[in-house]
Amino acid sequence: MLANIKEIPGVEAPIASGAGWPIANFVDDFLLARGGPDLYSRLLTGELAWTDPEVKAVFEELVELLQAGYFSVPADWAAQVDKFAAGKYALYVMGSWIVGMVPDPEDIGFFMFPGTKGVRGGVDFFIIPKFTERPEEAKELVRFLATSYAQTIWAGLGGYTAANLKVPVGVYPSPMERKIAEAMVGMRFLGVSDTIIGGEFPIVYPDQLTLLWIDPDRLNEVLEAIQASVP
Picture (cartoon, rainbow, N blue to C red):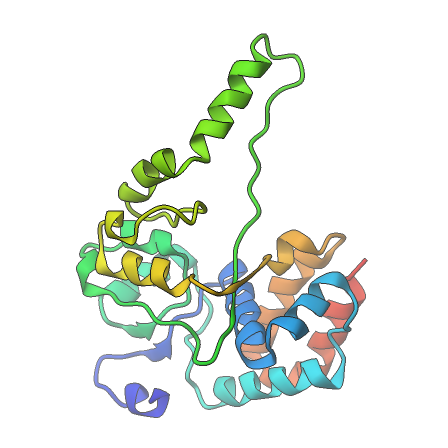
C-alpha cells in the first residue's frame, strides 16, 4: 500500500513525520504493534534493553520502511498537519486532537496499526494546592470532572477521548472520533515512553530517532545512545 501511495502525483511521502515528539510517538506505537504490549511494557519498566535483539528486530522493520522512502523529512509537527490536510501526505500518526486542527474533520479517517493489542496514553493529574482554602470543594470538583456526565460534555466538544468508559460513543462529534472511541474497547492501556522513563531519556529519545529518520544506517548507534540515556 505504501509503495502505491508513494506513486500518487502530488504526494510528497506516504507518511508525515513531525520532528521531535511525534516521531517518538510513532516509534512507541510501532513497537507496541509489531513487538506487542509485553515487549513495550518491559521497555517502559527497564526489564528489556533498547539494544536487545528482540527490540532491534522491530527497529529493523522500521528501518526498511525508512530506507524505502515512505516517510517525509522531519519538520515542525503543526506545519505537517497543514500539509497532511492539503493532501501532501496520506498518513500521520497523531492524537485525536488533530480533528480540531484541520479545516474539515469529516475529511480525515482513522485506523489502528494492524494487529495491535494495546494503546498508549499520557498520564495527566489533577493537582490541588496544599494551602487552598477549600480543599474539600476542590476534591468534589475533581470527582465530578471524572464522572461520565462531565466527560460526556468534554468529549462532545471535539478533539478529546474520554477516560470514563461509560461515555457513549455517540456523543463524539465526528466519525473519526467515534471510531477512536470504539477502537479503545478491549485494548491494553500503556503509558507514553517519554513520560514514564526519566533521566535524560525524554530528551535523547526523540533526538536520536530524528537522527535515525535522516540516516537509518546508524541504527546500532541510535539504540546504544537511547539505552545509555535510561536511568
